[in-house]
Image (cartoon, rainbow, N blue to C red; front, side, top):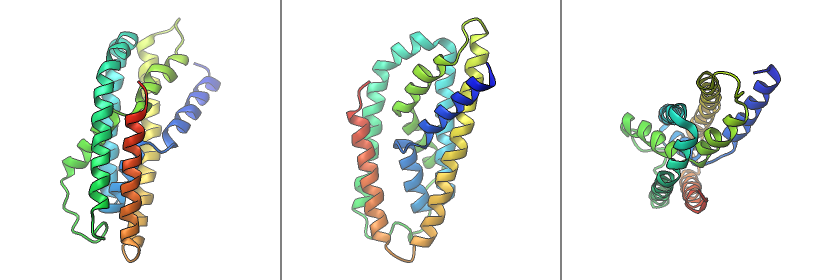
Length: 202
């Protein structure tokens, strides 16, 4: 792959990653409520999910994506319902978003990230449409797929982590004022993300 093509892939990956979606929404909401550590555990979970998707792609991209279409619909709706549930839970809060004891289990945040990324439409976009455009059919398919997939994962880790750190710092500042506003805003964002995910086509 030429350096120009690789930089073009990195730019496309960057644009896909920074656009807020279900994954970014969950990372920000948890970072606001529990601190940056929770958001970073979400990021770790999303990376595990991306690794699973990349493994599936390596084993058979075309046939796998076709099969995943049916499974994806189920995961998409389940993920959407979960986001709406989290949003409603925040809307029903009593201004405790940033002041309560931060005792949520670590595994919970990791599994949240893992679950949400499995139902994120961006993943099918990346492995089903973006990466294939940059693969040279005359060279080793698996090596190229792993290289591009790993590149996407690195970029995603960097910028999702930046979201977590930024939201975590904002949470510390907002803990002294307008806590209820943050709860409502986060809840509406999660519900909006869930509805968007549910209404997306395959």
